[in-house]
Image (cartoon, rainbow, N blue to C red; front, side, top):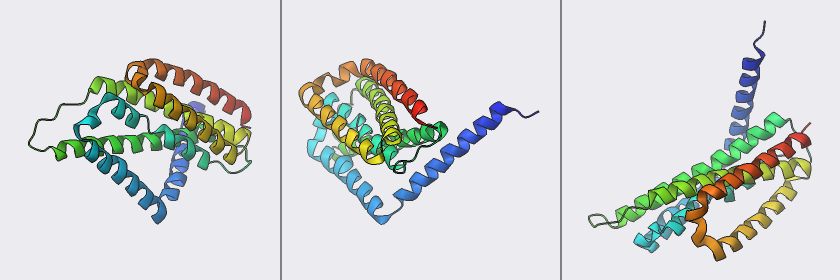
Length: 213
């Protein structure tokens, strides 16, 4: 007798690998490589070099830890063809791809930035970042990636890839305003905000399930 649980699990893993390969194929162009290198240089080297030890301000590090949501949503939307419904399993795999991509970008930028600050003051005392605050905002950033990726997936299936991109722009603009006026709260509300993101992401995933065939 077939073990349908393991068969289903194997199919799910195959779907995830297929979607990762599709996404990776789109990143291998020279234009994409140069764009990522420029991003790494500006935000991973130049900005922390100019900021110096002030870069370790919890608000700045918190903002960096949340940058993944700027990449997760658009990356997820990019994987959906115009006007085409997909199986729910494929939709979930594409959400995972978007979240992983966003968090990989964040980890690279944070790692390069912190290393740049320490190397800039080599041989001199440099206060350590507030690792607790950074951990909380990184968790929030991860959950926000899930929220934006699931929102992008649902809107791309329900409407279109262009509609998903437009929704992402509106959401980014709203977050930019919120950060401008209340950015200092980010290190303190990270865990609460992360919980809210999980709840809303679950709602969008349920909407995605209903929208998929």
